[in-house]
Length: 309
Image 1: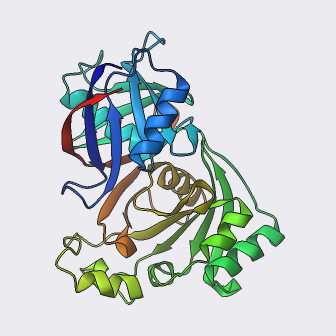
Image 2: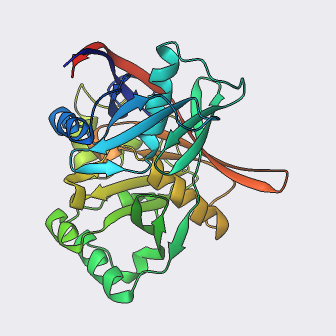
């Protein structure tokens, strides 16, 4: 074992402890996959990352991303959180306008967007789910057919069944059967648009868990109203509900914008029912014949120190 620089970062929030936590080992050199996996199981966070020297000439650093159950080729909140930790620890990118992350999904451009970082969503593959699978997932979520506007299987590394629901209120009122979702073996992401007259405090919406958190001194801080509410259910990975999910929001944005369900710029609230106040900023930009979906959010370091590993 050796002493390695370590940070625990909260992602998709500017206020500590209201986003999605990430463990970052800033020097993963010499660790084999088994050691990385063991440490990721021990942290018991949704993801733990290990920073390595890049092997691609244009990359600034390489990252490996682990959940407690296995390695991911790409994930959104680990991308932004690792970039934040790398920069804060003194990392100097090769370019002034972009940081380039190497991961198993390829090279991911990350840009600074004021106080936030934003990554370019990786290529998306999508297809229609089978009616039988859609019916089983809807039943596990307690949804009726009229609640579902559209559905797609979304694959940008992680695979999600994406559901566009009729409103943000429907999203917030879901009480899933997580065991049934686990048996389906599919991660499910749901999105619904807020009405123009949305209440300023999302945490006070009519939802059993949200009402409980609204009455708590540890309730999430007030945030500007978002355009969409998103929830991510990942029971097959041992995570009943993920607080804020970059890869899901990236694939949802690519789908919803392409099909005219969402504008070229919008903001997502996620984590409301968990007492979090995550904010994800999505934008579509075209230049030189290339279109990118940028997925942005703030990050803040909560723990800085060393780990023996």
